[in-house]
Image 1: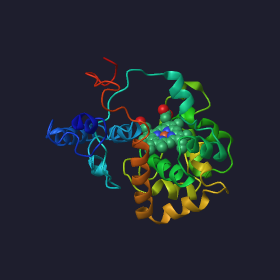
Image 2: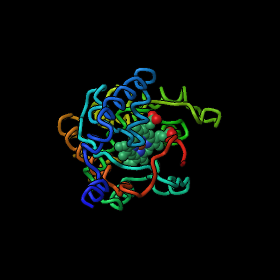
Image 3: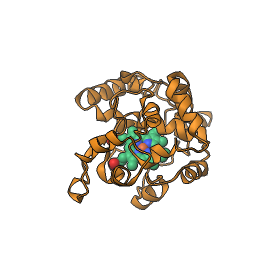
Image 4: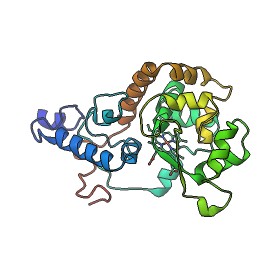
Length: 242
Ligand code: HEM
């Protein structure tokens, strides 16, 4: 009975007896994947699939203890993904309310957005910003236009979310915002004369503060109603339900 209750909760040593090598196996698989393709680190961060403590450290940056034992969903919904995830065209007040619906503060919104220190976005996600917005560094906009034209033929062309250090986890994302070099509309909204300006400037000058707040917010996000115990399933192929 006690075991059953215990197994229905997340813990950092969930696999200690059932699969003691789990973390080292995951860590070396992640490192191999990142060596082959730097963007894999961003993708992993994106889908919150960081299953082993310190696995992102290959990039430097923050670390935190991941609660293990979560199970996979038996369903997937494109419409949920489209409605539940904030759009890059949102203004600050809508970003704040979108995060607040899930229990996140403005500080957590800004810290988590710092994840855009890595990874890339498709031209269709930032075309309007580089052609029509004025709170953008003009050289940055001109540079991006060469790879992201007005034609839909370039919709899928990629640009780094953090132009200055795309594959490193650092606080350059916030320095970019100070320079008007946020790639997405939603990025630059965090520094646009509103209530989050001071957080952005703090993180732009103190990577330590950013890392501490980011790690705490990631742990909190990882605790958003995970499936445990007998809920969900363990997929044999993580891309699809069994
Ligand atoms: C604040 C609200 C957010 C908005 C509006 C947003 C929007 C986006 C968009 C539009 C992209 C590009 C996707 C594409 O072109 O296919 C992207 C990429 C990315 N986002 Fe966010 N995002 C937000 C918050 C977050 C958070 C909280 C995290 C993680 C903690 C995150 C992690 C990432 C990563 C790592 C990538 C790069 C993916 C890759 O290179 O494959 N984002 N985001």
